[in-house]
Amino acid sequence: MSPVPESEFFYPNKFGLITIKALEDVMGRNGLNAILNLAGLPKYIDGYPADNLEKGFNFSELSSLGIALEDMYGPRGGRGLALRAGRATFSDALKDFGALAGVGDLAFKVLPLQAKLRIGLPAMAKIFSQVSDQTTTVEEKDSEFIYTIHRCPVCWGRTDADKPVCFIATGLLQEGLKWISGGNEFRVNESKCHAMGDDVCEFVIQKEPLNS
Image (cartoon, rainbow, N blue to C red; front, side, top):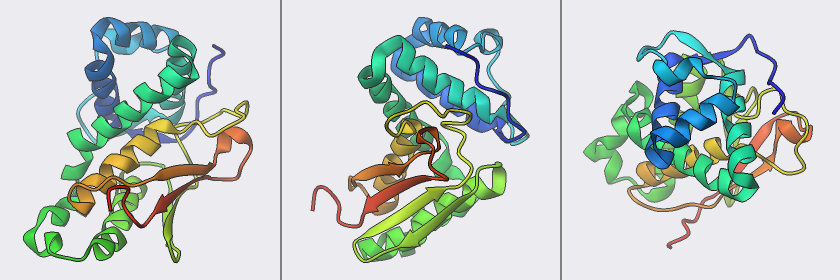
């Protein structure tokens, strides 16, 4: 794979740590090491990113991990692993961030489902905008929410895709919605992607859960 150009944008080290540990959980240590080598990130084999909120995990590193998953396991296999890693990333750590802390409170839990989504989705977006260089907005429509990543680390530097590739972000959103809603699964469809030449990475989230 050709290297992804380094960006001037960063995730906190902790987000990189969470993602790499999530990949290790779903593919084992040997599988992870192979992916890190293929992604040009052997430095993380012996030492994972630090467990802090300093911005030190380059957007290009997350993008390289996604490409390596596709290269090693094929589009379908890579997609499945990236979705699982995205889900694990949320469930392992993001739910503990300040903007989402109140979502576990009893007062939140008794809200109607749509009110939970209306509060919880912008809270998720706010975390990324506050602690990383990812900028995210949420717009509500009649039957769906539009979750837009304006500066996306998952496909940073890619322009070669013929379909959306931000599966880590999709998985993260799926798990976030499940937690916010108290256990429901939602359809999350990436409708625009930087890697396809779009201006933004856009995710359409159906308001009605799949298990309704």
